[in-house]
View 1 (cartoon, one colour):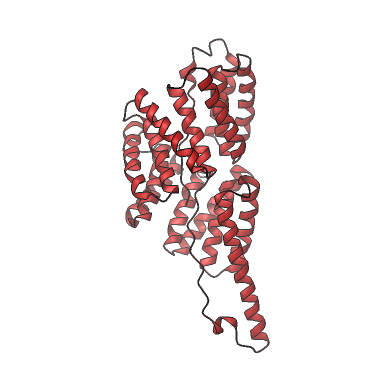
View 2 (cartoon, helix red, strand yellow):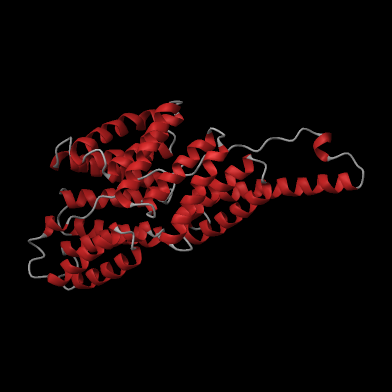
Length: 368
């Protein structure tokens, strides 16, 4: 199952005074924001690169350059290009620090977004102190019940989830959800994200009924806000599919995964980590139904895509690699058994008890 992170936007209004007279930079930046909302990541990337070029005219430590680099990092993250996302996010942090803004809101935003990218790359030891630093600043410059503090709190909880510390994550998630609902309303996308993350913590702690209700509500909000063909809707569908698969309710799970896959492929293109994750979830589902050939096909595609988009050493890539090895071993054993049956020999599964494949957890994703 995916863990969902909320990225803190670099708000143009914070820097309106700095941007006075720079209509081109404002135009590119606001256009990119609209494109991101519509999941038009290619257009957002194009506009933000133009915004970076404009901002560079004002000096290496200008706040507009930090904003543009930070927002470009979020576009790269959404497109699954975590290497470039990290470079841009680090550039934003450096500009903020060198420009003498180490204790303000914008610097806290930069730290939080860099932490999220590092988390998605599996660099948890590097991510945690950045989240903690961001939260410490946020609590100084924003009220404790503000959306910004809730966002960093919820993202820190995601890191605890990745480390398997669900009991520590849950109270942070419940607090963040309460803030979101009061500040943003019951049908806001950030509420849907918080619901999905809390549902996974509940599921891991055996609160199945509560988790199901949260996941259903999360999906309904995303569909209401974005329609049927947005990546966020796909993530909600895939998470619900993972939930049913873990309960061995495979007839409910499969169509949810397939619908999510179709949406991702249409909206994100041919190569993206989210597509690889959904393929791996389908492989897991087919494996546990004994549909080894289909599982192997999905796992092979997932592994190849993970290598291309995340690199060969990413934790998710390593997990898919292990599943693929097991599936290939199963296929070889099945072929050997079939040959033995054809020759009139005793099949291998009758000679020894075969160890059942381990049920793999559904993997976290580079989060949106």
